[in-house]
Length: 119
Image (cartoon, rainbow, N blue to C red; front, side, top):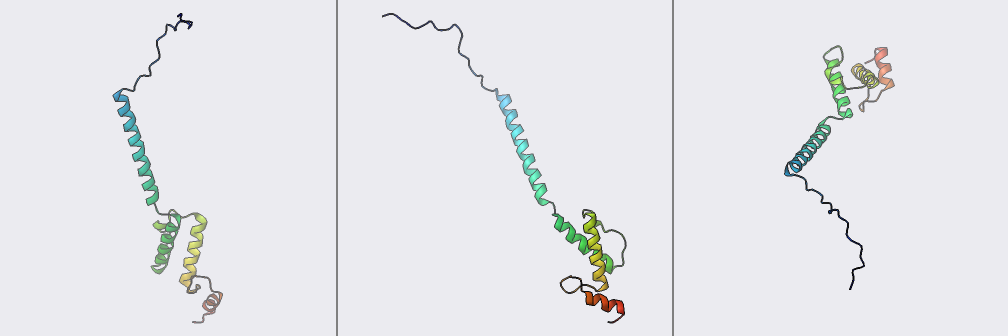
């Protein structure tokens, strides 16, 4: 019986080299550091107060400042946007003047009573 197959090529088969232990260790360390940074970043982000929390703290600080006849912007209000801060100042001023009802809403009758000098 004769072999009708063509002769095999003279090149050796390619072998994919295995990564060295040092390279594998470097990849594991890099992955661990990346995971630790990701977890740390998420914990930092979750632990920060929300904007609503900052606004509530500013509102409390403004009410306390009006009661103490203080002046200036309280430190608790540094993270509040300009327009929101203006509204909080006006709300605290109206509350100090007695123009707000029990729900914290503006009461026109209380404002008129206060401006006419009635108790």
